[in-house]
Image 1 (tube, helix red, strand yellow):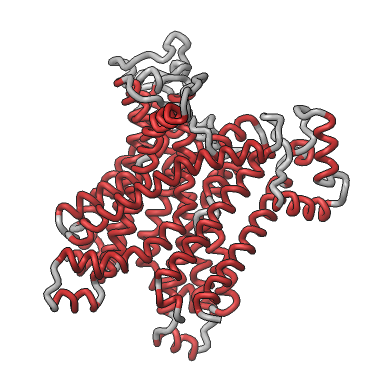
Image 2: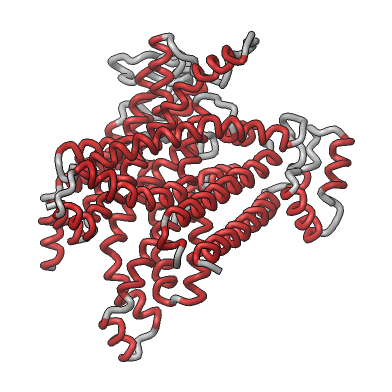
Length: 324
Length: 284
């Protein structure tokens, strides 16, 4: 087996074990709840008798614990998370649309933040030790320190004072759209503030990551060598330094995805964006434990899968891993 | 003692460090002297002052219960500092022991600890914290433990990478030759050599814990009955004070969280620069 295959299969095995541990964790965590967890999760009086009966059958609630555990793992794998106590419908029918809404916000924010972070990080690293570097680093640390939910609040205040932008939800409530274009325009309008908030929070983080990994690269011998051959600054950065600094950035960003989720959840709650974060927030307040149980699994699995993608991308781009 | 002297000399000439220390010192004083500074009992309600605007008697106005917001903002420093420092200490202590054991013992133990670290770094801690806090109840000790127990992985990883090189140094070998036990070597010989990163790391852990505590309270899973900055911001949202444009309700607690976190981060970076001579010479 080549080094690449060996590396990837090792990562995939680790991911599979992680997902299994997450499922197991989820099962036991919710059964450690004070009170009667089975009652709270599956036999809630909010559900109809026929719903409870079908849940009892699907999750084997009258069987011994270890059989319930096996059924839980099996059901989780097939996307059966029970019935939401608050929405009175299957958890997956609530969860997956919310996940999609989260990604609509999170993916553009991450891409824009990475793009901007590479530019400012590059400038700061290249001019390191100067006032400009100090300003960029200080600004990034400040963005990183601002409580996300408060920054969102500031944008809401601004929008209210200027009466310009919608501050809540994904679409105008009760609006019907004559065309897809009109719907998209409404969506984008609603997206401006949450997208700006999330992008700014991630941007500070990515600038610091890019700056630090570029500074590491700039210390390398081959940079000095290229310099001594008379390479121009721009050529040196673009051809030699940045490509090598982007590699560690991929893995650091992947590792930090778990942290980005925090920013995303807070942003969604502030702007009532109907994603997973807002769903979790509402589920906590409504004591909708089946939704919480499923949301934890979904978010964790998405993060684990994103890490695998980053690992594959990284080892594909870095020949040192490919040809080991 | 000579060491301490040069540390302070170095620290005093580090602008980030001094700024950070002043900020943290300011909030520490605010927390300690809260009963003297705040003009009102922060819990005293006054039904006739429903969301009173800023005035000479209530400079930040009042909340829906007529409680003085300035007093509550002052008292809020206490919870942030207690949770930040305690949870940061829990995280750093676990991370230190895990990193020392993992790096020094190597082999299967190292492999197992590192896979656990990978797991804790990957899982979205905030979702986990929300759920655990919602399930176990939001007492102060629960919040500290939940944040601490879920934040130790980055520290463990950094400490381990340092231990990996330190354990190859001759003094470790000579300690082994003198029949020193593993625990003794780890804590007497290796530990003093990792403190350089530990202090900087502890400051960053504290800043992250302060952020997380405020975020959890804002999401309604923290201790919503005690006075904290996150709770004041949460109330500003839920009572509609924010959407009615009440600046002095939301601005101060947010700025306090931001500045306090920034202070700890500045101190963390400064300690890293001071303790790591390589960074110091690069920075000039």
